[in-house]
Amino acid sequence: MIRVLIADDHPIVRKGLKELVSGEPDMTVTAESGNGLEVLRLIETERFDVVLLDISMPGMSGLEILQKIRPEHPNLPILVLSGFPETELAMRTLKAGASGYLNKEMAPEELVAAIRLVHSGRKYVSPAVAELLANSVSRASETPHDSLSDREYQVMLLLAAGKTVSEIASEISLSVKTVSTYRARILEKMDLKNNAELMLYAIRNNLAARV
Image 1 (cartoon, rainbow, N blue to C red):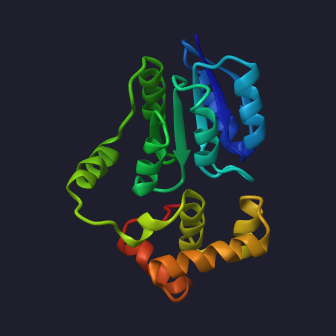
Image 2 (tube, helix red, strand yellow; image 1 turned 90 degrees about the vertical axis):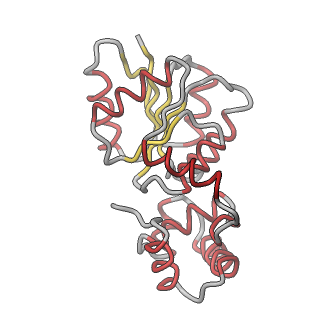
């Protein structure tokens, strides 16, 4: 049996994923969590074959969790799930050590196939991500959002999705002041004046969320 850990801060999403995974004859969900620190604890105390990790966990983003897991568990297959399209976020997760990146709009059979693939020791790369990888090889220069840190990039995506500073602070468990600081850095690094310009930039660069 493929033992799966589901990490997502939305109970309804965890329930759906659990029903989907548990419905397969060769898979079982042995633990689930909605908190980044608990995910790290579970991985240290229990054995899993595959981890399904939401990119937008509260307090500690999926990327930060991934970066903490990898040094101690370099061979643990981790599939990152996100409500955002396969933009450079997919590239960041793969560079951080993810075994694959899946948009939450995927077909159920795609997730099941991805779990089996990474469990076998291979990487899961969707056609959209494969195209991004190919384009990144030939891209001559960086785009403005390439200069952002992983946390800044996460906040940028949420701002581009139309969320307020207060909403973002609540979603990722940071203070409003901290998120405001991130917003200011993002606008400065990307040479943008306000959220409207940021949202337009995201749309033009296919960074806007579909949810």
